[in-house]
Image (cartoon, rainbow, N blue to C red; front, side, top):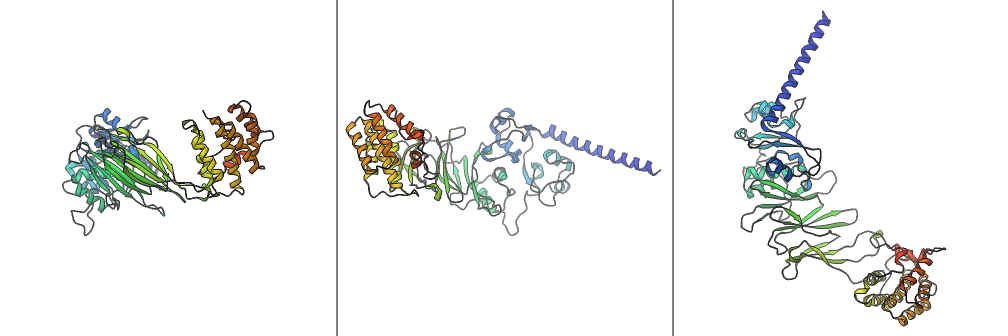
Length: 518
């Protein structure tokens, strides 16, 4: 008898479970049919391409999928997007709080549990649980009786958030859209940002921007503070929001230790609005600054820097450039704050937007050299480019390296000055050789042998001259030098002399000992 009762209980339990699962399936299927459907992102998809394919505005897609708003507005293959059907009800997002349930929320918003679940199939689980922090879509007809977030005690209605304050950076974009839609007023939006603690302390953290040239802002640039995690220093991000006429997130910058908004407006005088900012990321001993410029093309934002403008410990400013080019970007710095980086000097880079084209590097000027090593580097560069000025600058710089007593050793090699000056003596002879001046080339070799007779490059210069003098064939002379360096026996000292000046400086190889200049 007892066994029969047990079998009956199991049968009733299974029947109840089956009925519950059927109801759950009906809820989910009903949601699919009534409100929309799920779409799995594929490689190559974007918000714009899915909007075009489904005839759903980007703003509507983003509001329906706050979980999928990532940095740079990327979509990841395999993630699921809810595609609302055209004509679906308007509403707003609610962030689940501790103690919420389907029943309490349905009662609060004056709707049935079934209707609430149909509007939120992504949150329907076998357990029936809701998780604190997840977001539910509340159809607009249910919003009249209750606000979507509790009023902070003592706060006035003018400054209290109308949309839930986001707790995670990935939710910022969706929260911005919800608040702009709810408030419809930029002043209230700014108050909400401040009340939520999202607005950066900078005085220009919220900047309206007209995309059409009139006085009406169609875009907003928002500089935000991100929540601090553990012992990590606070970070910031930058958003560009645009009215389409509904608000959409056009861009979200990568988090950085600090972000400085350089300019919002027509920077390069091409009659198109731009947004320029610098982003700082700090390591153990050095902060690197990267400059970004986005330009509005009339339909979307484009990266307006050709290349990468990144510099260690940089100071960035915008400066008027040549007529018609608007303002250029000037960056000064470059010195890495690490002993292992080697001897360094700062430099100035200037980037210009010629005729409205993307910004390109037009000049790089180093601070005056006080280290003998840096003069040698400058001379080596001048030799590589020597055809442009008949090797005049290379000759002048190698001569300075030989005779300027004010130049000092800046690294930790015991015979640094002797090594570098003997190298400069050999390269001076090579530069004269490229000029076709045999007399000066021979004299440079003789001076080197007399001044530094025991130096490795004194022997290399002698080998080069003996091969070069009979035919004035630079390729044959350099081949003789290469054979001596390679051995047997090998002579690594010819390479080590310049190869180990810290990781921030250029390397040096056997192929560079005697360069062939095209």
